[in-house]
Structures are given as structure tokens and as C-alpha cells.
Length: 402
Image (tube, rainbow, N blue to C red; front, side, top):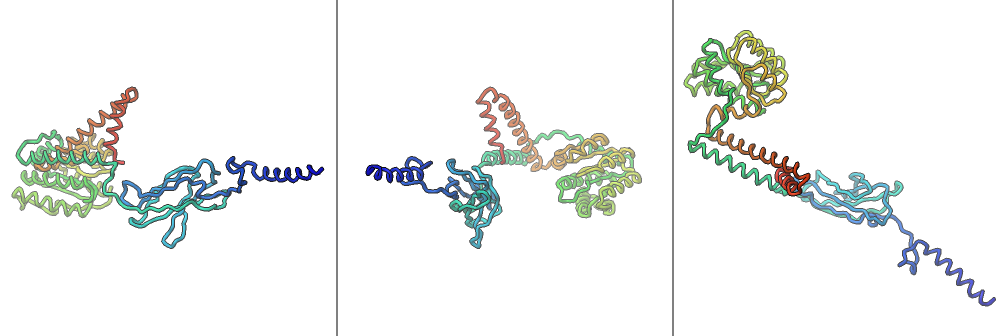
């Protein structure tokens, strides 16, 4: 009986101790089990903030990983410390490892971040705060190869320009539409009818209009030389002013300033189809023998081309608008397709600088065409031969601009 009195308290003590340590790790059996509460430092294994690489500044890259041995939160909120010392939420994150870039920041200023977990809609203690300072990078490390290629292309362009200055003849592919300029103006002179030049419907801030003005200067030289009337209806007032000065200068260069008529270069309207109707009226009344349509055109292209064809004019058209090129090809005698419009100034002027730059650009295009062909073949063969895939990956790397 006495032994039972001693054994009973021991059994009770052992039972209580065992109940407290159920589910405890083995190393904690001797100290008991403390209740674990969720916290930011527990579930976020690492939160890193660093300046965003290869940008113009104003960005901070954030990355985080979640511990695998803790309860996953229902959601997470990324917070940033504002200038007033208050943590403000930026966005809601998925409870998983991830990355995010905070952009639109001020360069040189330090920004602090933390992540707040939510369990059952209740915010728990946040993770440890991290800080970073955004700054701009002068060199995009992912585009070094493109810089090398651009440098080589520039060297080639300067080389051909220098060759042109030294008097070497640079071959440029014959462009039928530009070769026919002199014939078209001569035809108008023989028939005693005017030459109509349409510079498109866009303003002088459009590159196609600028190219058209360059060609207008060459056409004006021919009309001044042959004594043919030149009509230039414009859709923009600024284009009208520029065209007047260009034609005037061309007539002066040829030695026929007295033949220049300012009123032949006029403004019609900014309205697209109002301009088309006005130009069609000029075609029907004046019946020009040669019509040049060079510049930016849209839905009015076929309207103009059909009317010009109906009056029996020889038509030379050119535009870089892909949707309008088929209409010009169908209704005009000659068509400058795409970049031929921009090459026209070099082709007509034979200026060494322009010819050299054009030849250099052609060499650059040839280089990229070769790269594309080799890349496609390498990627195709790479499905069965690993070295070929390495070549394709290398070519993709050196031509990437991301």
C-alpha cells in the first residue's frame, strides 16, 4: 500500500509530461513544446531587393522564397515604406516563390520593402525589411553584341562613303520608276501639257513626305530644263510652303528663275477625300501628261490613280504603305515599292555621301539575311544535332535586343 502511494504520483507526473510533448520534435522532448504562431520571418526564407539591371533607372527587382516547413499563408501583401515612414501596400502576391519589379521610382533614393502574410484574412507579423537604391545603367549588358554589329555596319557605311568621295563608281540597282522620270517629263513637254506632282496627304513630320520633297526637287529641275508647267497641289499648308521653296531653288539652279510660278503650288484642304476630289478635278481639267504620286497615301490612292489613268497620263507612284502598294501597281505605269522611295534621293542626285550610305545599308541587309538563313538552318538541324543548336542559340543571342 505504501509502494502504491509513491508510484501513483510518479505515474500522474509522467502522464502530464507525455501529454505536453505529443507531436514535439525529438530534440524538444526534454524542454516541452511551445505553441507556434505564424510570422513573416518564418514563412519567408529570403527576401532580396536590388537595383533593376539594364534599365534607365527607377526600378527595383524583388525576389522571395518561401520556407517549405511552415504553414503556407492564404495571401501575401508587398508593402513599401513611404517618405512619411508609413508602410503602404503595393500589390498582392501569390503565396509562392516569385519575382517582381517595382518601377517608376526616383533614382538615388533608398526604398524599403517587406511582405505581410495573411492567414484566414488576418495579417500576421511581417517579414524582415530589405532596402535598395534604383539607378540607371549606361550600358545594356544584354546588347553588347548588337553594339558590336552596329559598330561594324557603321564602319562599312563610312568606308563606302569615302570610296564615293574618291570618285569610285558605286553600283546601285536600276530603279525603273526613277529612270522614267526624264521620259515622263519629256513626254509632257512634247504634248504641251503640265506635269502634276502629288506629295501625299501627310505633313512634314512624316518621313515619306520628306523623301517626296527631295524627289520633287529633282522633278522640278527637269520641268524647268524642258519648260514644262509643274502643278503641285498639297494637303498641308506647311508642305505647300516647303514645296514652294524647293521648286523655286530648283528653278534657280537650272538658271530659269523667271519660269517659276508660285501659284502653281497651292493648298487645297486637310480633309482626306476633299483633297482627293480637288486633285481629281485638276486632273480632269488640266489633263496632265505625267503624274507623280510619291509620299504617304491611304484610301484615296486608287481614286487618284484611276482618275490619272482615265486622262491618259503616264503615272509614277511610290509609297511605303504596304496596303496601298497593290493599288499603285495595278493602276500606275511605274511604282516605287517601300524603301525605293527613300533611295530615290541618292539614285537621282548621285551624291557620293548618299550613294555610300545606301550601299552600306545594303551590305547590312545582306549580313542580316545571311544570319537569318544560317539561323533557320541551324535551328532545324539542331533538333537532331546538338552543335547546330548551339550555333542557333549563339546567333539568337548576338541579334537579340531584349
